[in-house]
Each structure stands twice: as C-alpha cells, then as structure tokens.
Length: 280
Image (cartoon, rainbow, N blue to C red; front, side, top):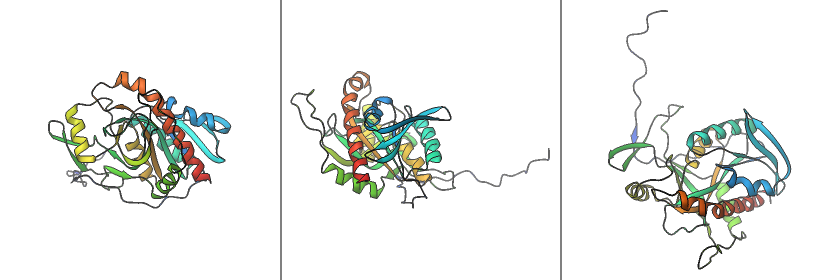
C-alpha cells in the first residue's frame, strides 16, 4: 500500500443557516403507475380493499401489492415506522417501478390545535423538523447541510404542483365519513396544509412550541419528510395525505390507539378519491 497524501483534498462540509426550501425539479421519465405508501398496514388497508386485479409481490424481501384503483395502475406498500424504514422502502420501490408519482397516506398527530380527529391535510409542503442543531434547550437551529450531490439539503419540500391541483379538484367532490364517535359529531374537513416529520413519537411542550413557531405545521408524523426528500433526489413527484389522530403530546400512546383507526380511514378514503381524480 502506498503512503496516503499528507493533506486531504476535500475540506470539511459547509452549512448554510436557515430553513431552506427545495427548488422545483423536472420529473424524470416514468411509467404510467402510481406508488402509494403507508407506514403501517392500518393505513393502506382500505386502499388495498378498493383495488382490483390484485397481485402480491416482493422486492428484496419486502412485500407489495400491485393492481388497479379506479382503472389506474398502482403499487401499494407498507414502509414501516420512522424515517429510515420510509427512506429504504421508497428508494427501492421508486427505482424498481419508476412511478409517475408517489403518494403517502396515513395518520399524524395534530400539532395545530385547530385540526380535529379525522381532518385530512394534503401537504402543500412537507418538512423535516429534526435536522439541525440545538443551540439552546428545545430550540432548533435549522441549516442546509451537504447532500449526496454536493448540494445543500433542504428542510422544506413543496408538494408537486400538478398533484396539488388535482387534490384540490378532488376535495370539491369528496365526502368524508362523519365523526360520530365524537360528541357532538362532525364531518371532517379536507384541505391543503403543512406536514412535518421527525423520528420522535412523543415530544415535549417546549419542542412543540418551537416547531410551531418556526415551521407552522398542521400535522406531525415520522415518515413523509424523508419520503419527500428521496422523491426530490429521484425526481419523482410526491404528495403527502395525512389525517389527524391524537394531538401532539409527550405521551400519545393511548390517544393514538383510540383515534388513529378513524384517521387512517379518512386519509385512505381521500387518497382513493385523489386517484380517481387523477385517472379521470
């Protein structure tokens, strides 16, 4: 082995302070197919029920279901919980199927107090709220760090403009289920908004306040930020569809188990309506 150079050619990475927003990128060539992801089976169950011509398969040992939804070719898969699982499955499936777009459906905690259980938020933007430095307790200093292309990675990823336009059209005709389990009952709303992601299930009130102040999200969950980032790098249009389950809190387990089934249904039902609008 020869003697390594005395000095490395590459300097330490630079970072750019602030909440950076990903620039729009042209989509790469794709197949006429939609990839639909959920973090857990509860979130994709109704979509699989609504499909026709179903055929199960596996990619690198990970299962998926192919078929049609309102006549459109779809592949549905469960990523598992958290950003690492979501990143892994999204990358594998996008590279394999080269979809025209990726949709992610499921539940999220209600970090905006105005959002109710079952309200559906279509992601105008998806954020990563846990990428940065803690300069002081619970206050995040966000920055753009060096990415795999020598670029500076964004914190905020806008939803695809064409998919958002189709979603707004689908909202006009979509009819959610009534939240009759609540008193008084109500009909959930579906609207565009902001969704943020991080690998924490429960967080402190101080972190909640900081995330609200800096990113102004409606919902908080654990996967879509990384999925948006993968889709940005792979030049694949992405849209997140999430429904509010428990409020964002430091110990959400019991509330999540009680409220997430209804939220899963509402997100899945609107995802089905969106695919219908896309196919029409």
